[in-house]
Length: 417
Ligand SMILES: C[S@@+](CC[C@H](N)C(=O)[O-])C[C@H]1O[C@@H](n2cnc3c(N)ncnc32)[C@H](O)[C@@H]1O
Ligand code: SF4
Image 1 (tube, rainbow, N blue to C red):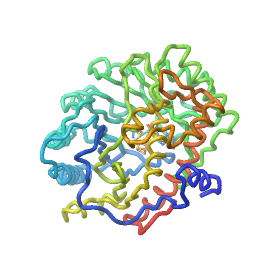
Image 2: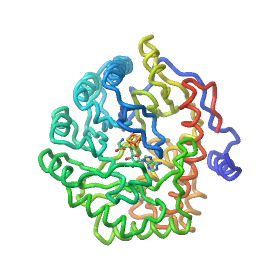
Image 3: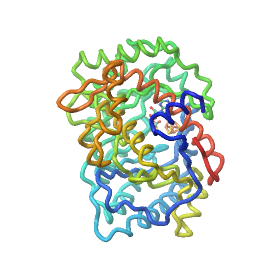
Image 4: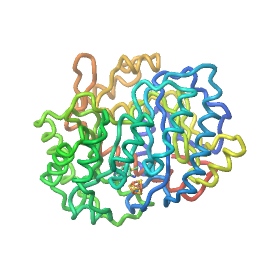
């Protein structure tokens, strides 16, 4: 990790102690008292593995996928059955991989979840454009999915060929989306690819909204070292201009920004599993965030299943937060939604944000990164660029290192960051 990342960590956590992830776990997850709990389920299968993608995934095989889901359902019961009564949770998101490949079993997974939890804000699921057919969407709708997210990446041949992806068929998407309705239809795009212009992005966004999306996510391309995509990332100045231009464009069209990378053309259409006070993750590579710890399941499907068969949680690494580490983690992910409510921070930590980070707040305002409106801190255009810059940095310093190790070692002894 670079000196700068280390110094920033020491400054913000007020201690020399690094983030230490250890090969240990509690047999019981202490989530019964957690407020604002979200659920995440990981299904790691894809028809083709994209070179740029960092997620835990493997080639789809119907039998392997079925076996995996049998284990997943056991994990849900193993964790959920510790509750004395059903627990209210905000949302449930299925990510991957390509969870839509298991469309015919999503209902069973939701039924297992429903035995222990009451979902109050809907169920989201990711699809590859190839999965968008009337039949699959109907199966998902019947299972209770209310929000979908389609990984389009781009509608332009030039960028699809850089990403090694096939053309999505807009006519097929339009037809299927017309026939089966969802509360949120989101489409993912990757930007900051070599040569990409504002006009390319505007065309992608408008195409998405015209064929049935009501929400778009435009993710800056992250060049994960372990993925070895060979794609040249854009230079800093070019990135900044594109990021500012696309933000201004979306503002001028009246699109509502609900997180740093996402916009909707209809109020209320949201798709985000990111900003949660706490969450429980099921499946290989899924993370769990509780009041005082962060856990991540093994990335190995084989080892995941072995642990479940032994009635043991599939946790690979656990980080036990110090209070300051937890505060930084909280702020980082709230900033992702472009706003932080100091009252919610105080509710969560029992100490005011001003008391914990008064100097940093003052500095962020002075530097023009945030403004305060009605007691809520909102990120400015400049703040959004630096957040992007820092997130990219954080992703490469922390996630790249951790996932890079976990892809090859199912249960690493320790990872220090
Ligand atoms: C799990 S995939 C979505 C569903 C499906 N597997 C697909 O690819 O269509 C999640 C999303 O992460 C984004 N993503 C993947 N790799 C990325 C990278 N290196 N940089 C930025 N975004 C990336 C893509 O936009 C992708 O749609
Ligand atoms: S981008 Fe989607 S389809 Fe491609 S490997 Fe990643 S999860 Fe699978």
